[in-house]
Image (tube, rainbow, N blue to C red; front, side, top):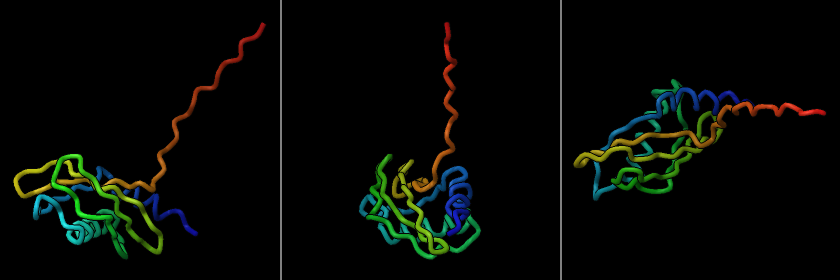
Length: 116
């Protein structure tokens, strides 16, 4: 199995965290609207088709509200967290972060042996 896809999505889909803007209905972004918007944003950023996006529910129209989504690309699943970053009237801005990407480890300093 190739591991290039999630790494490519981590870099491409979240280059500066995807930012979207959707009109609110009942102070939340409906699940179906959110799934469509995330799919479109990922395709634009990654340059390859996204088979599907499934979110756990609606995104509340409150700053810092979040919902978990799963995208399927080339048969592989990518975990995503969509977080509202700004709410202005009936518009909500949000960012999409890749939960699946593993951060590059920071080297740990090696202790210097003390001798005697």
